[in-house]
Amino acid sequence: METIAAHGGRLVNRIADPKTKEGWLAKAQSLPIIQLNAREISDINMIAVGAFSPLEGFMGAQDYESVVERMRLANGLPWTIPITLAVTQDEAAALSAGDDVLLAACEGTPAAVLHLQEKFHFDKEKEADRVYRTTDLSHPGVKYLMDSGDILLGGKITLLDRLQSTDFIENQLDPAESRQLFHKLGWKRVVGFQTRNPVHRAHEYIQKCALEAVDGLFLHPLVGETKSDDIPADVRMRCYKVLLDNYYPKDRVVLAILPAAMRYAGPREAIFHAIIRKNYGCTHFIVGRDHAGVGKFYGSFDAHYIFDEFDPDELAITPLFFDYTFYCRQCGGMASYKTCPHDSANHVSLSGTKVREMLGAGEIPPVEFSRPEVARILIDAMKGKSG
Image 1 (cartoon, rainbow, N blue to C red):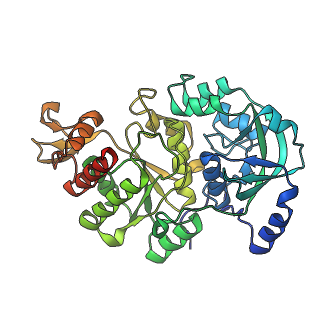
Image 2 (cartoon, helix red, strand yellow):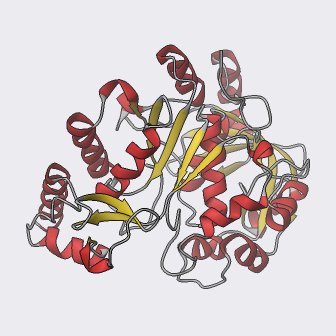
Image 3 (tube, rainbow, N blue to C red):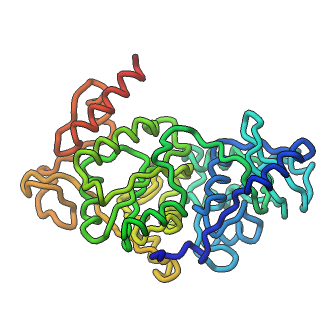
């Protein structure tokens, strides 16, 4: 028996069965075609497997406007990030509502069919201001938005080919599969953890604190499109695995990939990430400092405060908020500003720049900051990149 319902009450499945797929592929040559980029391919996969439930396709005008303005779908259900398909004026001109449109990967491989319901103009400046809280082009989410087409296409999709990489195949779980696994393991209270970075001691401390209060941890790293200077997914996966092998109880942690793209939308993305983990079957979700942030665009705890704008019953997943954590020499262990009374001079805390400098020089950071096994993987990866 499932412990938590999918967002909206039903787990969406938009994957074509073999017969339906065969039928659409037979018609593919006669359909208008839209080429998808990496984020859009990620989005159609997330929609199809139910990770974006209750969405069944790309948003129409009513849902889009409501999400941008109110952080809710048109029916009132909480939703904070627009899931849209933008095309150029010329591409849109060749399409009409009611058309079936082939969505193809960059190399032309048929990926899905869009059952076009509407096409509409949208205000990029407004979306940037509301969703990302900035129109600054140095923000990667804003830059992506401004570089996209000027017309949005709305409608349900039917997925034909998941175009899955063979990378991390042993860690691929769809929402229906993770829910079945949690049930099999007897986990009724499951905490999800979002990350696009290697796990260091502060993350480990947060996860283990949460693990004290639940049945299991769902370590769910995002492996879709990220910034060019983020650590590659294959390197991060090696870090997660060595950490779990050596420092976590094997029967209380599940490692699975999240094939979503980062938006870097800070507070709004924290809500979005919580909803996604709810669809995967999590009952709790860890929200750390500056969740899904980038640069200095968001306050340290804005991703905590945004949860106050929603009734807990309508989100129906429990956020676990954590302060900035560190190793305190005086305390003799990991702590946070909520628990440690000592001056920051006692805290082992390194900037990202300092850590990269140390790793680049082949130097392992203090054990109080990073597990040496993880540091060695990162050092080797940096050597390979520079070699």
